[in-house]
Image (cartoon, rainbow, N blue to C red; front, side, top):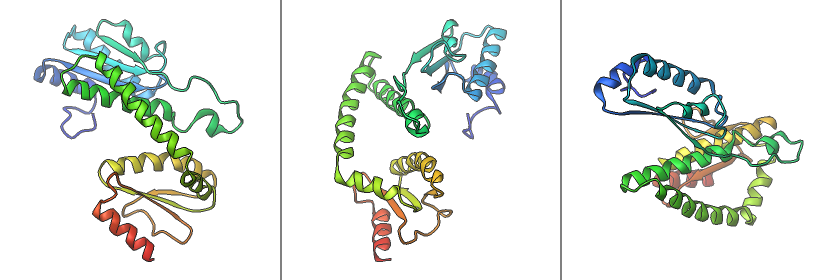
Length: 237
């Protein structure tokens, strides 16, 4: 809806335009709690439009962890569909707020990314919805092995030890790697800020690294030219 081509300031203003231009319009909403304010407003606006104009061109599709939530109950409407995507199954028995609640409900958010990516792949391959579950299972198995191997490594432990010290952190990458860097920086900032430190995404507003600061450079191939140049420059400094 923030895209420059969206035909209105909100869904209420855009709905009549979309109805004339498109044969079918699907609103997709993702909310772990099912009580997020902005999605609730958007759904209310479109629900009012659909019922006021008796439109049959729209569907409202929600992904939530609680189907009894305000957003989850859209599934009770003829034009509503709901998928239940669960997050943490249990609360960790600890007084540490980060361990108890997680950071930005990572389990749900990462699960959402996996679900949407595999749904997109199934659509691109002209396959039905049952393939989505198979694709998710296959991908999750691979991801699990990578994560298990990494968190048991000495390198991972060294990273944790360094992050627990007083230092600034800068994350960098290009393309999809930059998206990973941004996601990691947001979550890491919650922890480092509690220590009085900051986490930055590389760019014009990120300060020059100091001695003892940590620089994370992300590259799938390990051959991204600008990332290599940045790394070599940092090493020589």
